[in-house]
Amino acid sequence: MEEEKVIQLLRHYRHNLMNHLQIIHGYASMGKTDKVMQKLNHFMAYLEEERKLVNLHVPAFALYLLQFESLHTNFRLTYHIDSENNDLQPVDELLVKRCDQMMEKIEMLTDEMALYELNVRLYDLSFKEIQLEFTVKDCLQEIQSKNENQEIAIYKEGNDLKCTVSVICE
Image (cartoon, rainbow, N blue to C red):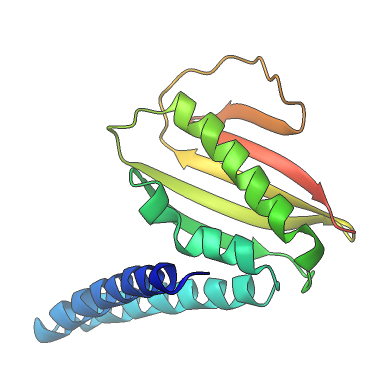
């Protein structure tokens, strides 16, 4: 990764960290300890997910998620890692490719002027297979059931848009 890109990523990461700390500081200065604890717990859960992501040994995928909001400005990302597999290095680039494919489809189905909450979940289907699941919360767009790419499933679940793909780990 080029030095300028590293600095840009660190700048973005620091900006997010400062936002969290400023909110906590604001609640602390108002004496709202219940809100301070709530925000601290939320931030600690975020850092725990980040630890699980980094421990998967998928640097390209980790960077994709860590810089996601700077690439997709109308999405606010949360992610959850529910995999016991601690070495997905062989499928690192494939994970990024599948993420790009899913985001391409999601962006075609969403309004670029609207702000969306996107949840990404990576979990085990079996010992050698993982699932990537993208959920766009409260996406009111209608979708066609036609899927030209059989590897990626796109469907509605209530008001949410879901996009999933399985990846074989070998």
